[in-house]
Image (cartoon, rainbow, N blue to C red; front, side, top):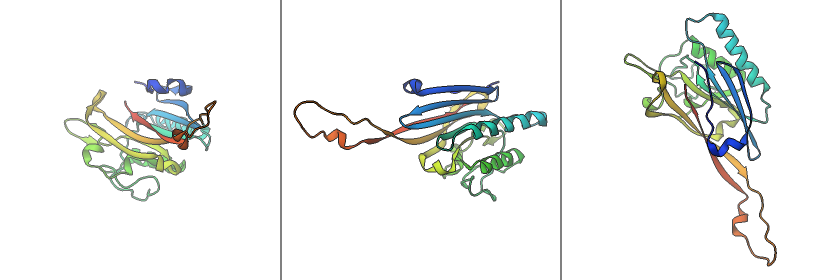
Length: 216
């Protein structure tokens, strides 16, 4: 099993780089207006795998994040296996206090990583019903193991983050979606000949919505 990223057809020309690090990590860079976006898709090692495999995963993700310039936007999404729990539990800056279930070791690893790089877990910052928090379900359990992260200083860009109920994907994972608002500057238009007021030119900036999803 590997990772991949789907891009809306309208954003195809905005893609400037795609880098597949390994079967568990891939990053894509897009330039939208004057904003550079880095989107990372991850698939963390499952419980029971060798500790060396887990170490390489976190080291690889660390390296990716360190290589993204501070001025650029960063979004990370994927199956991290761990449970961050319903409450922040000492991780107030990275956990919004609206998670699901009980935390475990895998969740603590994610919280420590998020804290170290000044990130925040988007699907923990909005009060939601359980059906909008559970990312994986089967006949015996409902859990939250998929997460979307962004830089803490960009938290205001995130307008919403939730699971879409009823959308069951491969291996019973559910679709997790984050709505992000990006401001895109428009070029000023000039007309030859007779001078007249161009009312449309009075608004030089318009909001552009980018919707990112995580799918395993």
